[in-house]
Length: 382
Length: 140
Image (cartoon, rainbow over all chains, first blue to last red):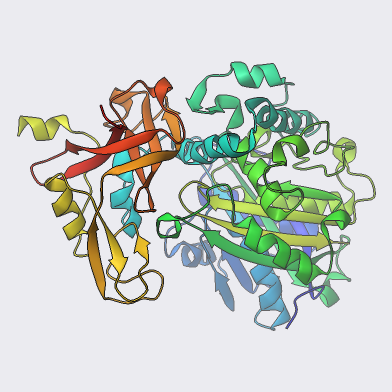
């Protein structure tokens, strides 16, 4: 069974707050849900499929309770920041299968105001690999830095090329009134910022913010009668890469497996994609993801991100909202990829609108590239 | 006891699968596993082969030699045991046996570490029962 074109994103909402010490996580989720349902012209009573992540093991049931919902379909697939990209694909499949009719995908986080050191804290988990890793001081930044160092060694990628990604995201953020960091930066600024974990500088890293967002998905048939132009879900795929029992090539990302599948399922090629939302936890995440998705050859990512190619007006504008590097990153950014891509495809992006935007690709990366991570690719179109 | 308190990094919580590995580390010996059925050598230790799920495994004593596959010098980590020891070098080392493991490079200045640099294992005693396999420049 193909899901192509059977379901559509019909409502999106990005919570405008980046700092919300006066709000709770569930409040941010509920406010985001309200916004996305209003955007769709639907009511909370229409929702019969619920999707979330970033909550506790039974958190989705607590969320249903908070919203006083008794959904027919529940999915709290938790694969890191990519979870919500994955949920959107799952929602399309559930709708195509008739398991639910209106899916609400929702996220909220107060990690910034909770002072949670996502990137540079530690902690020991209880999964099998933890006893072979935690004692060596892995941080989120450090785990990605391992990939950046190897990429530089193998392919001659430079800090200047990585910085170009941060500079481009900041330029886009200047056009997004809700973005947290909007003042322009230069390559020199990135290189002059302190090293957090070599070779990654502070400005190679995403921020930690509070935030929330929601996406509403329904059948293509029902979508046609709703308020906004339907944004069809054309293809989806996911994958995970890990240490491969001690043999993994660190310069490949899970996008290498999920990207070609999602494009093939959508029946489109790289050249057809008008804009992309590429999870930018770090500059290196973007570079490796673009290579793994196949937008350029492996090792050529450094050259690809230069000369304005990934900026507005370029060949493949990415992260037009400013991304996690400059707009927001409450810990798990996947939902914002789907929200911004949807707004672009509807033509609602004002100053940062990509011209004639018909096809968008979202790719979420969850976990850490250097240890283990998930990848979820989604192709959306109008 | 005083020495135990001094070690503030997370101490590995060993289990039935990893016990032989950590017991060997306590003797300052490094082991990986090999599947007797498919010959795959793998790391981290587990009860079944990650290639064919065979339980028929053997422990292979490593030479302790390898080279740096990649590394990062970490300047910021809020966690106990690390914040007092900044900067430190975290690395994947590729062992002569062919598998890579996460570790720290010690015994040289962080700025001296390079990819492909030859290294050899050294052990840090975290507690009377647990020693951590670290790597230092070969021949030092």
